[in-house]
Amino acid sequence: MVVNLSMDNNSQNNKRIAKNTLMLYIRMVLTLGVGLYTSRVILRVLGIEDYGIYNIVGGVIVLFSFLNSALTQATQRFLTYELGRNDRQGFRRVFSLSILVYLGLSIIIISIGETVGLWFLNTKLNIDGNKIVEANWVYQFSIIAFFFNMMYTPFNAAIIAYEKMSFYAYTSIIEVLLKLLIVYLLLLIEYDKLTVYAMLVSLVSFVVLCIYVTYCTYKFKECRFAFYWNKNMFVKLVSFSGWSMFGSLSVMAANQGVNLLLNIFFGVVVNAAMGITNQISNAINQLVLNIQVAFNPQITKSYAKGDRKYWETLVFRSAKASYLLLFFISFPFLIKTDYILHIWLGNVPPYTVSFCRLAVISLLIDALSGPLWMLIQANGRIKKYQLIIGSVILLNLVLSYLMFYLGYNPDTALVIRCVICGMLLIIRLVLFVDMLDFPSVEFCKQVMLRVILVTLLASPFPLIISQYINGVAGLVFTTITAFISILLFSYLIGMNTNEKFFIRKYIYNKIR
Image 1 (cartoon, rainbow, N blue to C red):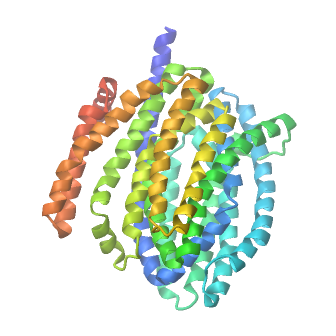
Image 2: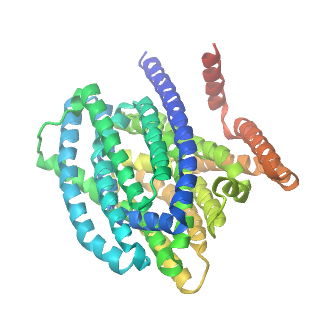
Image 3: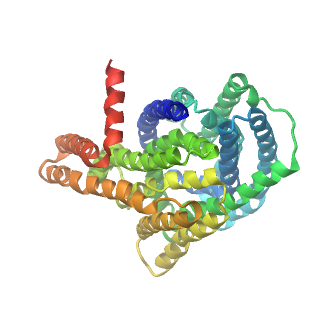
């Protein structure tokens, strides 16, 4: 009887994951479409130089955001864990304490940004003297936007813990409409477009913060702030954050640090290419993040309950779904990158094509690692994990500097990223055997081998089509054949028997 009840609960959880994934997928399509359109218009309106300045200056404040990223991981983990134990009072305490920590942290980061950050901006970055005043305004508005984004994080973590993923879809509609409004206003304004753009982006961040606060306050009584202080809980939160901080710092160095190196060695034009690449890769990566956000609460809750069989199943499915859906979206883009960028942007900055392709390849490799990261977060024993993984990630910065110093091209940094992503996947699987008794060999057979076979078998026909048909017709036929091939081989080879049954049943129920 208990077994049947457990199976029934897991079935309901699977349905919830499928529903949340669908809602987040709709959100991704919406934000992706608007993001691609607005990026094109903003690049044309600002120009390559100003667009590059915005990306590099905005990246300076991101250098200090690793503190926020670490606390985000800690807050989300502890809130979800408390719900998994059905401890509502514990949830309220963690939430209230995290608000206090975020307020204190915001003061620290803004202080660093207004001292060390300003010094770095005005003395170290390669920015034309005529643009330095505008760059400083962009920097100030970036700090403001960062503060708003940081303060909404506890509310975002609460929504994820409660698995209210449909809220993201509704909020995204408002957010993308505001971004479209920014584009329209930039077309009307005739002066200082760069500063106005930075100001409007920070204003959108404020609106999103207000929406999150309002929704959580009225939807969940546990999210109503009440002053609470507990030294032991604070130590746990900060200790978990401390080790996450090293990992976040490593990721920040691998991304924004390399972006700064590109500026120092090659100038703002290459930063514009990297800015476009980041826009595309972030938009595409939203698919993986959406899938993993849908799975993450259930992985943490099932781990808190001690349901090992279920969380192992979720990790396997999440990794496989992340890769296959990302491959489904990105493969036509990989084949037709130059043509798509030409249609989208018209004037494509140098290195953009190679940057984009390499960035997407690194995302495909990293998609398999996401669920493993979620599992170690649920476990909480992150010291050894973060020290090893963070140290390897830092090789991105070290090796990129070495290659640039030796005279290699800018796209070498993206090649290094792809290699290190592959190394990280292998290292995680080896670590988890010892730390969690994780079935890494089975993961290689059931996940990695299947997605590799799907990739190899689904690729040839679309590639052949792209060689013989050019222009719009070539893009259309390549995309259609790619979609059909990936869907076919994903079902035949990518899925096991249980997953095929679940997909058939889910589709049948939706049609009925």
